[in-house]
Image 1 (spheres, each protein chain N blue to C red):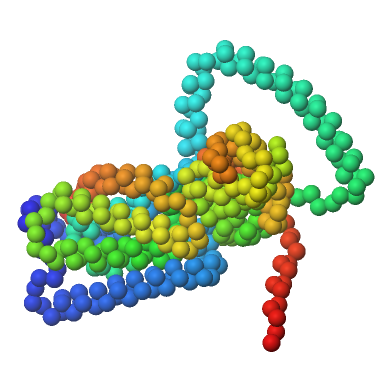
Image 2 (image 1 turned 60 degrees about the horizontal axis):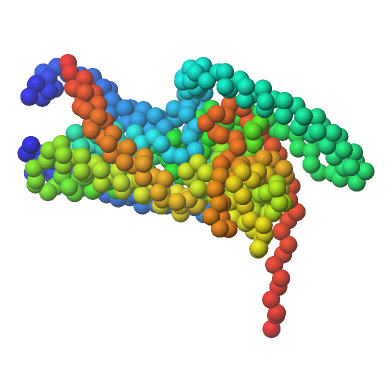
Length: 170
Length: 292
């Protein structure tokens, strides 16, 4: 309740309200730029995790089309073929809208399940598009980072919640 | 927790229209995304400009933080080194004595080799590197294996040029910005290198597996096959990679196929040389069919 009250009474700046989720998601995409050089994929896709965290925490924050610019930014930052994350993220957001339209009880566990399915879809989709565009190798190397990404979702959701508190604070 | 109060609930025309057009925009965006993927498939150089720009914009982040990470990574190894200093010292002394003898032998051979080449008037194995540049990072999360090089078109780097480090071949240039380039590593699933086994001279093809190893296929029928420990060098066939650059060591065999570990371990690289692409003669025209 305190969140809603502070939202009504004190006015956080519009910049903070709108831009913080977007900027934090793009910073998430940039985590892949950390200067380790890896011969096998190791780091989970933090951009996707942040986007999912915000979307599941605040369903009313972004319309489904918001995944397009975020996905395009992720593509350009990580160097995947342009259109990969753009397409996959938007399909995920549309699917989440479909899930939200079903009246059912939601809790953290269900959100985790939904996020896991989304992460799995995105990982396999990314591999398939990579394979289609320029030949990608075996499927199994994507399994460890995908498992890690699924395990990383709860802390990322907490991070989004903490950022959200600050976003809406007076 | 009750189901979320979704933005669709309400009787406001304006909100409902806004929602509808939002979905239309998203669906059109998906179509546009698929179109981009198709363009990337059939015209790989279509987005070179914008991707080069993005590469230039993101490289400084990586370049600045790289020394910190390298320092942190080697610290653990250095502490561990103290615990077996004595035995390591003995092994190294023995190895050094061996290496001295081999070095003298190698110098004699190199001299003889140069003399023989001169008598035969053999040309075409001098490759002068285009530029030496720092490797600043790699894409960690994607399924492809790329590394970023801190040199671009301004330094004469172009797509397709081979890249090597002191230890061996690293890969080839996949994309170029004006001050940064993306290297497709040997271990990437889309990379293939024509190789030669040093022990037998057998021709082979090394393909990346995407998990840090190379898969080696023999290209000759009934050859002597691979052994664990075989050294692989580029054969220079096909004209992308210059000949005789060390590539990897065979770590395991199963029938005609072997796995190999690349000699230039990308995680430990700091500098790399970009080599000019070796000119290849144009492909022979396909034989024309019988005309009726």
